[in-house]
Image (cartoon, rainbow, N blue to C red; front, side):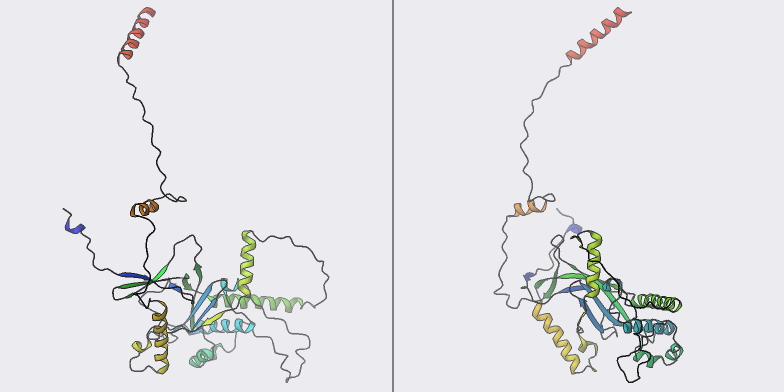
Length: 361
C-alpha cells in the first residue's frame, strides 16, 4: 500500500485546444533583470513610451520612462541627455549591436557655407558635438524645463534579439485559461530583454567626434580631390563566419526601425476614478486582441487530435537514441555451448611438475 506522502492526486483537469494560426506575429518579451512584481504599466509610471523593431535582423527595443524626481542624479542625467540629443542630431538612429556598431560622424562644413547669407536655409551649421556645454548649469537649475525640452536622460531602454524557431530546438506555445479550458497559441519567437547603455555609447561617440575635429584643426581639413581608381573583380564568396557577420552588421545598420503602439493591460483598473475615454479604448483594444487571437471561439466544432501510434510505439519513440527513429531491435543472441572443465587435468599437471622438480634435484 502506498505511503500517504507519496500520493499524487489529480486536482484539476483541462480540455486543451490549439488555436488556429494567426496573421500577427506573437512574441514573448522576457525582462531578465527586472523583478516580476514590477510590471511595465501606467499605474506604476513605467508604461513604455515607444516600442520599435527591426524585422529583418530581429532587434527589439522598448523605451521606459524614468522617475527623474526620486533617486536621480541630475548632473549625470543632463550630461547623458545632452550626449543622446547631440548624437541623434548628427544622424545616429541606433546604438550598439542594433546599429551594427556603426557610428555616424558629423560632416565637415561645405566650402562657402560660412560666407553664405543668413537667409540661406541650405547652409546649416554643423551640429555641436562638444562634451562641454556652457548651458549645463542652467539645465540643472531649471531642471524641469530642461527635462521637458529633451536635455535630460529620462528614458531607460531595454533591448534584445528575437530567438526565432530554427527547426532544431523546441516549439514554444502560449497558454491561456478559460474556466476548465487551456488554449495554446504558437509563438513566433522569444526576446530576452536586457538594459541597454545607449548613453554610454553616445558619450564615446562624441569623444571620437571631438578627437577627429581636433585633429582636423591641427592638421587642416583634407581638400576633396578626384581620385583614380582601378576596377577589380571580386571573388565570389562570403560564406565564412567573418564575412557573414560583417554582412549582417552592415544590413542591420542600414535597416530602419518600425515603431509600434503599446497598450496597457488594464488602465481602467489602475485608475478607476480618473481614467478617460482614451484609457477605455486602450483597454478595449488590448483585451479585444487578447480574446480574438488567443482563444478558440467555437470549441464544439474544433477538430480533435488523434494519435498515429500506440502507447508502446510512443514510448519507443521517446526512448530512441539521438538521430534514430525508434528503438533498434535487438538481434537474437546465439546460445553458447557450455564447456565443462574438469579438475582432474589440473591435478595431473601438478603431479608432473612435482616429478620434474624431484628429478632436477
